[in-house]
Image 1 (spheres, rainbow over the protein chains, first blue to last red):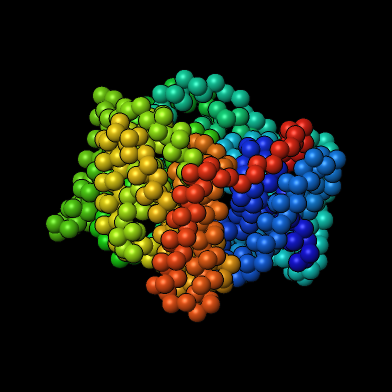
Image 2 (image 1 turned 30 degrees about the vertical axis):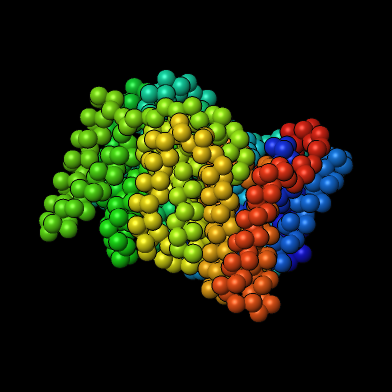
Length: 211
Length: 211
Length: 211
């Protein structure tokens, strides 16, 4: 599990660094965006739960790891699109691994089941959301694709199995396997949630001023 | 008061979902933006004050409520502009109710009076600010309209009445009534704070690089 | 040191207010952006470390100070570009002073050395980062210029001197002096970290959908 976690934060750090490059950030910026992408979801989860000390505060070696991954990704960027499939697979593995880890940590604080599942999802997707805010775009996770939904399904499955009395290692394996498969299916067949269409412009322009 | 709170978070969740639709977010995105709009202000307040557990962590049923309100608002979006007036009234009620609730919670942590008032305002307006960051626009609350000012005035009035020895229920009623009326007047007569004009472009472009 | 801190938060609040003016924010918005720019870095540091109560919660008079500085900067904006050099020097002083103060506070919580240095840098630069998010632009600190790097170097020097047994007042003086000089050199000679160039567009558009 620890190895999967390291692979996951490396994949997330790389995705952050690559997006930062498109915004013409300097080396420092790439390292910040990569680190925030990799560790930001867990940080928000721990702040919300009051779970101190934060993981990377207790283990600052993770920071060296994400910075290293960001720099390697930036240097290798020209070749990364050849590795796109590998990258997407690692990212999918990271998403489900983050989700299971996030559920475990939330459960250890005594949180209720819906919060446990939500914190698993926050761990999985909020890093990418923070990355997009730093890069000044509407977060991709809010717009399209079965990404957060995969995290949600993984968390529900994992917590459900534990509640049903399944042993933790088995529940972890099943949830990660099923979530990973679902994510690959979503990528392969371009599955997505519906986007509701509505002409809300007239409403929004006037009413929005209320905020 | 609890009923007013539920109405307020429903109105805020709806406003978040409607703005998310204009950004072409999918269903998941609408639920996230709606929930962040409704509960984000209180979350920031509790993080700043170290007030654990957070309200929605202890009562996850609020999450179901905001998600439900976001989905209903999205489905009813075509009809929402007919309900614009109702919506703005609910939002105004929510703003002042959030403010009073925020002041109470801050006071319960022993915070000083200026912090109590500020945390009331944060509870009232930071949800909308987070919504605008997620939707990638300069927060409306920073740009125009007597919105934050209404929250500030409500908080000052509420805390002032309590300090003057007025009983809590009376202070709550007076503050909410006066704040609500002020907000409706601001909407009716388009009251706004001044926007200072200045040609700071030459300064900003050069000096801004310093950050 | 306390005087330097007050100068620093005033300079940061002014920089926030000036950027808010360019976004046509109203007076309330300028005060919020100014205050967040001045106190946001320390707030994020304290949230991450679980260091309660936050500085400005315990000392709300700082809020009056930043609001005052924001208003003065807004009123004086037409003349500020004549004071550009003074402003940049104050900002440079603030950057290094924030860094040293941030290191001290992090060390007082028992954080490990890399975290101490990182929290010094967070105190120095995250206020400006939050300012840019509120103003809806890719944070300048991530894009160019030796700014965060100066903060990092100052923190490393300061912590290194303390570890080497140098007395705190001497370490503070040397670190602030050296950091300040480095920042002025960076401004004078337009020193900057490299921006890596890469055509990642094709990769990003497709793979980015995965987030």
